[in-house]
Image (cartoon, rainbow over all chains, first blue to last red; front, side):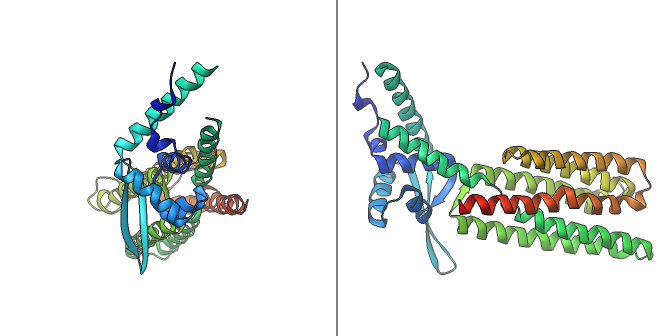
Length: 98
Length: 192
């Protein structure tokens, strides 16, 4: 039987799963875009992005567009593989659950 | 587990919305090329052919610079760069480079005869429009790509003096109209 602990806990949290899903579909996305899409707050999003960055699942780039600071996030190869594994584990779990 | 599946579905729906093209490049390049084609015909008509090359270089370079700035600004404004955006960007960069090489190197050194220029350019454009239509999954653009292919065949059959006029006519249904329809479609998607 497949257990929950097979699902990566770094990705499994709802906000982080939303971030990973979003980033898996795009080349890169900015902080405010992710914030709007995940419907979360600045502080909450920052915390989750830091956790994902520490796990080396995403890369965060800080830059400026004119005078406006920009924080851009993108999935790393490690993150992409981890997200794929997470989806596979989830599929296995669902099949077993039926 | 149901919560996780719902999150994944929601996020996929939200990112899918950004795959829509806003038509800006089609509109801008459409009007620029229409102007250049008419200019080419008028210069040729009044025996001022020496101005044709300068006019095309100015328009293509100006359009290239404006496109690059717009691309950067749009990406920042949208807050996201999708794989579709990036692929379409690379596709048109490749098409643009090929067309520039053909027109400004191939023709001047005599590798490509002037009378073959417009049909060759149209063959390039047809690939760009067709693949863009496929990437954004919009059938009308794929159909309008066929117009470019037909235009290239028509140009092979008629005197090359009229090639720029054929291109000027084609640019309206092949670029400008799809551009405005895409913009309308994009605006209504964003406002949903």
